[in-house]
Amino acid sequence: MASTRRTFLKHASLGTLGLWIPKGIAETTTSTTGGLPRSTPEAQGVSSAGILAFLDAMEKDPFELHGLMMLRHGNVIAEGWWAPYAPQLNHTMYSLSKSFTSTAVGFAVAEGKLSTGDRVISFFPDHLPEVVDDNLAALRVKDLLTMSVGNEKEPTQAVTKEENWVRAFLAQKISHRPGSVFMYNSAATYMCSAIVQKVTGQKIIDFLKPRLFEPLAITGMTWETCPRGINTGGWGLSIGTEALAKFGQFYLQKGQWNGRQILPASWIEEATTFKIQQPGGDRPDRPKSQNDWLQGYGYQFWRCQHGAFRGDGAFGQFTIVLPQQDGVIVMTGENKNMQGEIDLVWRHLLPAFQSGPLRPDAAAASDLQQRLRSLKLAPPRGSATSPNLARINGRAFKLETNDIGLTATSIAFSSDTCAFTAHADQVPHVITCGMGHWELGETSIPGTPPRLIAGGKPEGKITSKIAASATWTDENTLVMTWRYHETPHHDTVTCVLDGDQITVRFLSSIAAMGAKPNDARPSLKGRITA
Image 1 (cartoon, rainbow, N blue to C red):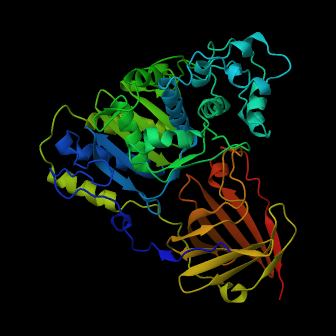
Image 2: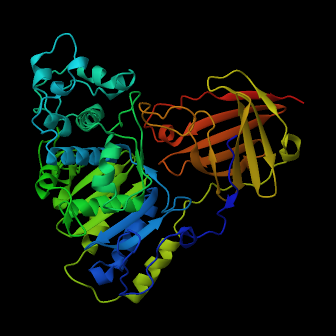
Image 3: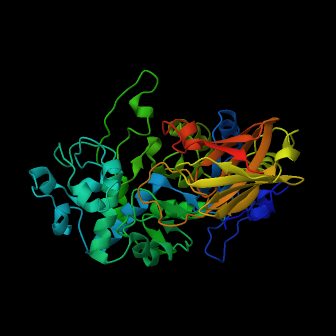
């Protein structure tokens, strides 16, 4: 049985969830547990007022952030999580995973296990199509890394429908000479993962553990696999905010950590500098020079404006490295307009970086500390009660046959929560929602959590951490918000009452923002059984 753990967030601040908040204007602290050292913005030459302006702009537009961490000179100078998101939680990275896959390739190259000039077909002689044309024969590891395979159509959806992704990738038509044309290609990154596993005998998450994760004191990460047990590479990594900050700092330090050269600086330079130009040019609303998706591409890293580079993932998962400012900015969240999010970084955070320590600004520093402590995503507002509440409280609705296999549902109310129960295969799945606040728990209810890409979905029962809230929008409509707060996404679940009948509709945040045409889950229809 999957049920929520009753943990109330009505009055919790992020400080109570483990958020570090600076305590003094010039204070610097060094973690003894593998964390990054902490300082204050002004002590490291960054304006607290500039960070506040950034937070104001994010709220005004609005953009939904889940986590933020800023580093200067190797010190964390600002960090915050929007409750119910929290520092100890992982977060789905989507394509920011690619930069870690590139790093695994870098270690394999440094250890002589492969080279970027190796031909891809040389690693998989048993998975080749009957006819290997010249373009497939010419495909190199470097072409995978630079998204220049030469496919006419992005192959990931076709590849992930098959059981053998390597064979499916090699069967895709390559219309252009490899290395000549950029086209975003997540399946190409999967192939990098498959190659590293082929030459090392390890999944890349295991290969990276002693080489990257352990030296940087990063733990708890997970990575999805394909049906054959290869990490998906181009997506599927879940990892914490501070781990992303360490990763960015590692690249800023050109592969050094605690005075030791872990990955050759030459690889860092090769991976993060311009390798190929993305197609596109000036638009009426934005010249090419101000488009962060047209500044060139490296080895699974994007070039940015202002001499920066970044790893990024769908919906706004960012690790932005600023060599000229000796800084790193990490953001997680759920936003469709990723360029708009980066624009606010350039507009507010970049000017906040100054060349030397700044005079203490007690008022701005105090305001920033308070702001970071109080960050939260408020649950939807409405009524905590309805005239129908007593009539349906705890009563079972038998559901019509549906594609996700739910057979019955009920809603039980207490003074400030409601427990939504759905039965599948005679197993009750309970999600307890706070009325006007977030209730934390876990769920494995079928059809959750929302996913942008189906390939690599973990096998068996998927249990997700969840923060849930509910409200009555009218006397017949109960709306629940289920935040899967180790992913960018949430569900809006609407229960509409009509006499002794109920209709339950699902809308994922992915579908709501148009990243998918609709929510594939059917509406559930049911009737009170007794």
